[in-house]
Amino acid sequence: MAYVPATTLNILRFSKLSRLMSMYPSHFAEPNLNKITDRKSASHIPVKAATNDLSDSIFYGELKNKLIKYITKKGNRNLAKELLNETFETIKRTQIERLNLNKGDKTSVIINSEQLLINAIENSRPLLQLSAIKRGGVKYQVPVPVTEKKSYFLAMKWLLDAAREKDRKVHLPEKLAWEILDAACGQGRVVKKKDDLHRQCESNRAYAHYRWS
Amino acid sequence: MKMFRKQFGNLSRVSTHLSRNVLAARVAYRDVEMSTNAAPAEDVTSPPAVNEFRTGVTNPGDHSDVQVGKFYTIPLEEKKQIFSGGGLTKKYEQQIKTFTEACIMVRSPALELLHYIKNADLSKPVVRYVLYGDNGVGKTLSMAHVLHYGALNDFLLVHVPWAPNWMKRPKESANSATQEGFIDLPFDAAAWLIHFKTQNSKLLERLQLKTSKEYVWSKRESTPAGASLIELVEHGIARIKYASETTAALISELKQLATAGQCKIMVAIDGYNAFFHPVTRIFSDNKQRVTPDRITLTQPFLDITNYDWTNGVCILSVDKIAMTEGYMDSYLPRYLLGKEGFEHLDPFVPVHVGNYTEKEFVSYINYYLDRNWITKTQPGFEEQLKFMSNMNPYTLMQLVRSL
Image 1 (spheres, one colour):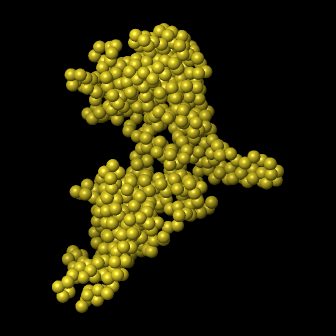
Image 2 (cartoon, chains in turn brown, orange):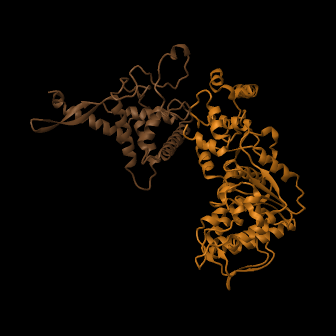
Image 3 (cartoon, rainbow over the protein chains, first blue to last red):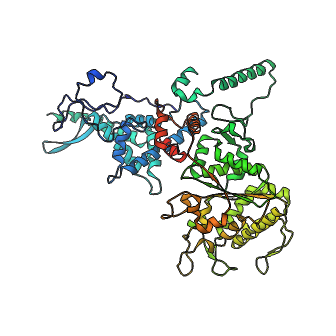
């Protein structure tokens, strides 16, 4: 099975502009997980305080962390972590079974579940969105570009929504694992949803100018 | 090869010359094959490759300190025979399925037990060995290792995969017909009989063991004296109502036969302390919780762990999670068995099962890498795993699953 390669691997590069109400002035640097090599020059750059979920352990992943936050309900983060771990386990199990079927051909099957999650999210990120804008008493569905941050949010939300829409008997990690595996190879409901949205935006391209006029 | 070594750093430093020898041997083998063109193709069930974390010795009787920390493979047939009714943990079964091989690590507690059993004088009263240790430390798997030895060395296995199942979640409970105020667990007893039959059917056929007296189940049904034990077991499976009594009869028969020297028996009971728990989750007719000694299944297994018979070994494990909340403060046998249980077993040989040693830990990580189970291999990941799991096998398994 061939996977669509992720467009960028360095994900979640949110806009570097400081927020309006940020407590840090704009020259403060983001906290860095990598080991600082040049201590002398680094000592002169003020750094923002690290958030308490940042860590340099092997269990940490930026996107993973974000997804855990979206899974969380009622602040029960431990449960959310547990669910994502189970998801990853299921993904790994199915991929290893596939690998065994392929007689150990490692090039065709990705086992790294975090990599698969990244691929899935990259594949289900939308570029455009429809927003209702009122012109002359009529509401038009106008295609509007989506910021990078929002596109990641939407991709993860759609994945989760698809996973939550299931039988009561199916466990969330199982369904989420299947959605991620599907999306990672460019199939499944989430990718279809993105494509549908793009198609609608395409058909409403005549209204695009309402965005500014 | 060079790249590989660089990637995994200090892990695969251990024995380079060993693997190189294997490679050389393989090359030589291929040369022979090419030159003669008549050598047979390698069959599928060829012994697995030997390297720093694997051993080709599949007979647990031959394991010694040389194999400590290495994995040996249980052949599929034997695994099916011994463990199809339980005996490996659920998580481990899953792992076996994913890794497509049943591998168990040779560890010192199991070796210690095997050493005792091999050197035991079977004509003396049975010795009781008690495995104890903290949660998730490998008591059940150590027992599985010894069970494999028993199955290969003509021991009749009397194996209870997880005794607390009977006290905590029985399939059905009914009042005993023969003993007043006692409770039968017919389905669980029948399930155990099936387990006994699958484990021992070959050996039973070979030994031709006979019952010593007649068992009358009801007006019309009875098992005559001199019937084979297989008949007795099959009756219990077919007539679930009498399964509990059949179990009791079977075990007393086995004890007599072993004492008479017709067979040798390996008793293995996991979660033995459940038999001495203050209460069970089974309710009697007057809505009172029943104590374990009021269950008909308890008696035969307490009976067979007594020391009044010979030609056998008893391997018991005491486990914190066999108890219920409020009774799980310590993993030591005296605490878990209570006064009554301790006196019942006294004198016994305690065998402590502990966390992984450094060598075992490294070997396990190597095994996981070999099976593609760990995909994140940043430098220093073993150190992190070691620190977070405290080298506890179960915790390591849980940590590694999402990597």
